[in-house]
Image (cartoon, rainbow, N blue to C red; front, side, top):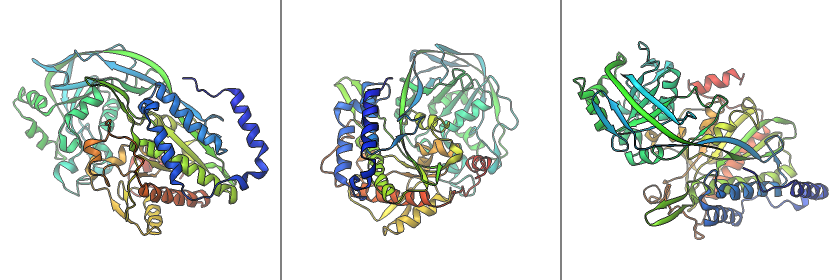
Length: 536
């Protein structure tokens, strides 16, 4: 999509900046948080005018231009080859929801029994007489001495697997990480591993508690239009069919082979479990409508004085769900908390850090990044993590904001993940200076560490912190506002929590921008291995 910026506007801004270069320090505002600025940004971004900030819509045009303009006014540079816009090629894939899944002589119905979608750029993906295999939890985790694929070949087959990981099911702290979800429990991992194993289709059996959300959420995210990043091979290396099964449907399947869902789930909890063919065949005809277009990340650079090729990233996703057509008319999902607050925070942090930099230049560079398509699978951050703007091996850490506390200040800061990386020590040290304690995620079973944009960095070996307060200070938020029309702006918000967290992020960013530390992963994981490959 084409930005509204023209060469004339860019040239005039450059000339204006050049003209005031000698007086820049005098004109920079003070370095403390101005909540009136934050209010203004949230109110603007979460207004109906911005149409819910849906990717590939008029709302995107307005959003990315607003953010880029704010960065440009501060004197920041574009971080993507001199531009504020990093292209994110997306495919919009809409499945035909009249399909049926046949397993043996069972005919399963879309939505009631299963979901199915694809990331392949294909108008039709089929299962024809595909062997069905139960692979337990579908996990291959050497550090936990667990491999559900150890003694079976699933190439070209349809695999069925359990949601979450064995630690949650047993609540045994010595099995994986007990109640706290690992990445191996996330649906994203399970589909990725099934693809690596060569499967043709993978269906995850849904249960509300281990999934951390009801079947209605599965339907919302898997039966309508979905976005996917597009690679040079039209996504042919990805899993052809990604799906979910209702528990009742899975039970019917296991009944066909003289077993039950509960029995198979119990067997899968043992390290001696062996994946097995169910001696059933799967058939499915998945038809799709395809559209391709280009979305944008907004990326701005504050260049370091001594080590300009080492980067701290401060990020927040700009997208939400746009407009929805309902029986009651058109609804706009403005996403004020999620995540206009985060974008407002990055803009305000850019202002105060630029002011500080004008007085005492930072040694390392700081990148302010606002990502597209977070809500549909962390796609914008995944694109950024490919290194088009800055190489990941040169990124020291990421400080990611996803839903701020717009109410009053609190005496704690939430930490997502435990014993993950040395960034946790930074969080503890600088929050203590605010007289705040570190409070561990009260819902570790939900796996929030793996569900926001910083995780795209983790997969490339970059450690970071997630700043998120969704539902923690407002008990009505998750049940009544999250991803709903009610997530709207209020001029009555005191923003005390926003002020606390922005000051905390500011302090951590300044420390990292001026020291020689490369924070390390502290637990064994693929993230730690990936960082070691970069020599960090």
